[in-house]
Amino acid sequence: MKEAGCYDENTNGVVVMVEAHSQKEHIQQVVYRILDANLDRAREGLRIIEEWCRFGLNSAQLVGECKKERQELASWHTAELRAARNTPDDPGTDLTHPQEEQRTDVKSLLQANFCRVQEALRVLEEYGKLYNPNMGKAFKQMRYRIYTLESRLMGYHRQQLLLRSHLYLVTSPSDRLLDTVEAALKGGLTLVQYRDKLADDTKRLEQAKKLRQLCSTYGAIFIINDRVDLALAVDADGVHLGQQDLPVAVARQLLGPHRLIGRSTTNLQEMQAAIADGADYIGVGPVYETPTKEGKAAAGLEYVSYAAKNCHIPWFAIGGIDTSNINDVIDAGANRVAVVRSLIQAEQPTLVTQFFISQLTNRVRPEHGKPYI
Ligand SMILES: Cc1ncc(COP(=O)(O)OP(=O)(O)O)c(N)n1
Ligand SMILES: Cc1nc(C(=O)O)sc1CCOP(=O)(O)O
Ligand SMILES: [Mg+2]
Image 1 (cartoon, rainbow, N blue to C red):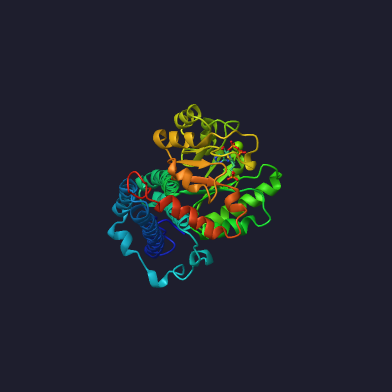
Image 2: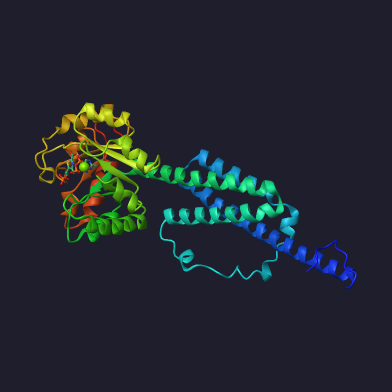
């Protein structure tokens, strides 16, 4: 076909020009429709994310960032793009993916919407170049900002949940592992660590994947003991490192800024170092000698009291804690504890979980007459 504007003496040049012109117009309308649909898509996805930042996370900062991006999207949504909309003829309006109908948790809902926004921005970047060269550049930059927002929001979400977690289940090998963890999750558990010092990596990977899925379903944080590589492989929320494991700084480089890193501590020097190194939480123990960590001398309730007065990041008393001594640990100043046997060997993990959480969150501090927070 001849380009519009070329004169052809053998044909009636006017017709060719008109055809070429209308073809060009048709393509332009298609591009406008694509831009219009994807501006809407990106804004809708951002709005869904923004609602969680507002009501779920209470973060004015994150709400402000979502709003700013939505405003920039709106500024590109001109009347001529809106005028190209033709919803009745759009074959895409009836198409839904089965996964859209069955979101099971907030995290996957947020991830799906980030994905939707990023895809829409990529379309805007490519087709936008045909509309206005600045549009392509603007949406490329916005896409990178949204990637950063996603990892910050997920990190913030984890930090908030960590703050609200008072009971921490550290697993040990069990034939009923998944059932036990699920029963505890049903009782309100929000923090789980996968710990198996003996299994081979094939088994660890398989178990860790299943636990990851289970924790996501219940909206709980999932941490891997010792192994940064395994944590990354299963997209865990973080890793727990002892004094003989990788330094916190090395793990941070590998995991990035938004996953959680926990550190075991037995004394004040280790506590101070862990805080200075940027740990997100620490283990404080062993409170009592325990067969789960044979050969490690008890740090005792004195160290718990020291942590209560001096530790300003979340900390979990650990080691030999059960339903009979939890109140002594609370009296020493703990309001977060981590347990292995008390839950893994429990006949009724749901009830034991509920009991621990109620003691840790509802008990009145004798000296203040106020509930623990
Ligand atoms: C919450 C929590 N605190 C302490 C530990 C112990 O870590 P570590 O000293 O590295 O010993 P192992 O668990 O690796 O035997 C923990 N796992 N979790
Ligand atoms: C894994 C672990 N770390 C500890 C520490 O003090 O660092 S104590 C401990 C074992 C805790 O198991 P239980 O609840 O069965 O006593
Ligand atoms: Mg370790």
